[in-house]
Image (cartoon, rainbow, N blue to C red):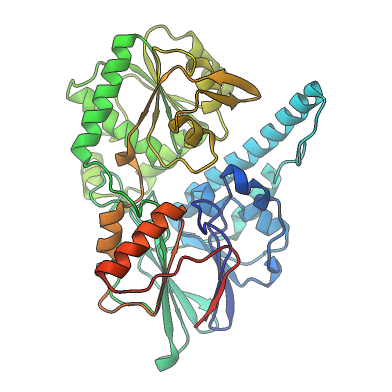
Length: 465
């Protein structure tokens, strides 16, 4: 069994790991790099022959896990992309949207650079096109949860619920036969327990090797009640200042969870009824998938559907798909809540809403998800007095707020609980998908409390066992 680490190493985007086992070459995730220092890796050739891969196994459909799949196919991959059915549905939306944004951004940069008389490293060419994304979609081969999938050779993969987003999974690969068989678990992104829309993360009793995320390895989240209290406070204070509340959201799960909580607050009369805009065609489409895949949702959400109540709707909620609808937000009088992607403010319609509000002291910018190092969202959260948005340098005068409890990632205590479920220590434990401070802190806790010796691999590291 051989592992080559090709992304999300000492960082939280670009997830990708090559597994060679059971006579097969398997790529687990193929994510887009979103941190500014590593963006060039998106354009680099893959450090393996894509056409020689037997399959790609996808944990979930966030861009940092699936966003380079069209590039992989462009370079020759033609094998199956195995995932859950819900992940396949979400990935279709995410990849087509990402390709559309790639094309729009390339055209915008071409126009802007021509106006400024300069060029960039990739000023006019999209990383991939909508046509490239469409070529990728037929390769998806959905699987059910907890059902072993034959990969060929002597290997199977079983998808377990990760509790992170709709359709997310942990992947258990069993390779070899008899006493020589080896079991490796890829955690994907481990969700928080007791979330209202998705089920709790799966646990495992044994594995020879574990590849585990460590995003929040150095801290815990607020409890759900505190999250609702914080959101109510932020909404009401913004109303008092007569500003807008702008929320960069990930189109998958974070947007839906914020909608769910806003609906609860409004129903409980803890916030006034406000026009609330979800300005993201992708998020609107994904929201529709929750009803289609309600069988895999948490019991709380399923019971609402059974009672005839939509958990993702409330009076005043507007779902915007078109650019024309998006432009009407600027004409709204009084306070409104504006949710748009992307969640790290790296692209999409959120940048236009930030431009319209970030210099207004009465408005609030609220971050409800992880902000990777080097992203626009991280710069704003860090307190930069000025940031550059769409080629303009603007002063940050709006109130900046952050609620970590909405995160789809398990906190430090939950990560440790997940590891404690193993009956025996795995022979190898690799920590990925975490910045240095988080991964180091989690590794220290594991050594101190469990006596295990975790490894934090670097990009390109190879391990055989």
